[in-house]
Every structure is written in structure tokens, then in C-alpha cells.
Image 1 (tube, rainbow, N blue to C red):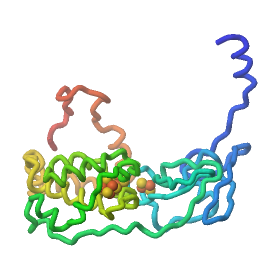
Image 2: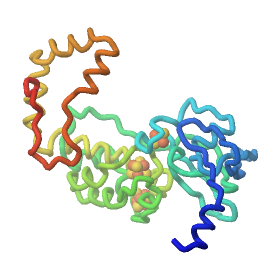
Image 3: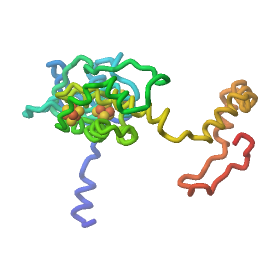
Amino acid sequence: MSDAQTAQTKNTPTQQVATGDRAILPEGAKTIPIYVMGKNYEVPETLTIMKAMEFAGFKFLRGCGCRGGICGACPTVYRKEGDYKLHFGLACQTVVEPNMYLAQIPFYPANRAAYSLDEIEPTAEAIFALYPELFRCVACNNCTKACPMGVEVLDYISALKQGDIAKAAKLSFDCIQCGLCASRCMGELPQYHIAQLARRIYGKYIQPSAEHLSRRVGQIEAGRYDEMLGKLTEMSKDELAKLYKEREREPDFAPLGTWMPKDTQYL
Ligand code: SF4
Ligand code: SF4
Ligand code: FES
């Protein structure tokens, strides 16, 4: 680093930001204006929409779950200053921008078919019968553009239209059921419910069954772990913490098949 750069770094004050699970504004943190239902609030610039709204005094009773971009409970529609487009994102993942405009909207309309997985035929025709709207897709790709998880929504819908349940199940694996795709669909498809049915059929009827899992479930049902679990439930919090700290643990990034615990009695 040059002398000039070093001097500049030394003279630059450390920027304070709001971090952590609680929206506490550190002294000197920069705030920006946002609008919630037309009312102006000043919020720290680094917060997500969810934390910014809590900072502004709102309390989430619904529409908030994991806060980690996984549960799909917080799909949000917003506008930006000077931009005619509607924007979409998860409130727990999208960082606020100056003059962002947030408004409450009703939950997304999405038909969800009723079925019993035990009685359903594991065929594409069964999916077509439950969700005939699948064929209203006009391949506009709005759904894919709206997806916060980067799921290729149009591709899984197209795979299903071609009867490829396995492909649709795999392509939609990262779906978190937020519904943002459905909110953008001119064909009014409930893409995520259709894909969920495909994954259910794939998991129950098409995918090869995991024999090691069935074996372990059988061992659990036969009571193999009852005594050990009974001892754990009798332990104090301190004893449990000690046991946890002292547990055998696989080294990070250990190559597959190269590590075994010394105590193999519960394997
Ligand atoms: S596919 Fe649809 S419901 Fe699933 S994560 Fe993407 S936008 Fe959300
Ligand atoms: S938004 Fe609807 S119509 Fe457009 S590609 Fe997606 S499923 Fe098809
Ligand atoms: S709260 Fe779970 S995805 Fe946002």
C-alpha cells in the first residue's frame, strides 16, 4: 500500500452499521428513508426489509418464519423510486434501498388441489387431472425471473407438461414455496404446488428407496435407541453440555469414507 493510501485508510472513519438479530441503531449509523403503506420512516441502510420494518415499529405476527431465506413465509412486493416496475423478494433477505415503497398485499391466490398421496397414480396424467391449469402456461418466463431461489420455474413446468416427473422434481428441489412465481403468472398457475406434488410422487413412487434408511427406521422402531435416549432425557443441562462438547466429531472436509468414530455401538 502506498503512503498516500495508508494515510487515506487511517483518516477514513470506520463506518458503523446495524448488525445482528435485533435492529439496534449504532451511534452514527447512516439511515435512509423508506415508505411503508405511504408513511415515511428513517431506517438503518444495512437492514433487510423485515428488520427495517421492525425497526420502524412493526411487529410480525404472520409472514415471518425462519429469517434465513428458507421457509418462504415472507415474499414481498415493492417499488423503487423512479422505477415503474414491481420488484419482488424475500423480506428477510432483501436489503432496503432509499425511497423503497412497501405496501401490504393480500396473500397470493394459488389453487392447491386436494389428494391422497397413498391413493394417487404415480403418473403425469394424475398431475394433469389435479392441475389442468398446467397447460395454460405460455412460456413467458416471468415465474423464473421472480424466483428468489434461482429455480428454473419455467423449465420444471415444461418438464411436467412433457410428463417428466423426475426432471420436474429435481429442477424444483430448491423451491421454498414462497409463491412469488404464482404472483407473476398470467396463466394463474400455482407452480410451486404442482412441483410439490411432483416431488411427492417422485419421492414415494419413483426414486429408488434408501435401504439403509429403512433399516435404521426399523432399528428405531424395535427400540434399539430407547435406553440411550432415556439416559439423555434424565441428564441435567450441564451434563448434556459436557457430553456435547466432548462428543466425537468428524473433521471438517474429511474425505468420504475415511472417518469412523471410536464408539460404534450406535451405528
Ligand atoms: S419456484 Fe416459486 S414458490 Fe418456489 S421458491 Fe421460486 S418463486 Fe418461490
Ligand atoms: S409465469 Fe406462468 S405462464 Fe409464464 S412461464 Fe411461468 S408458468 Fe408459464
Ligand atoms: S422468513 Fe423465512 S424465508 Fe423469509
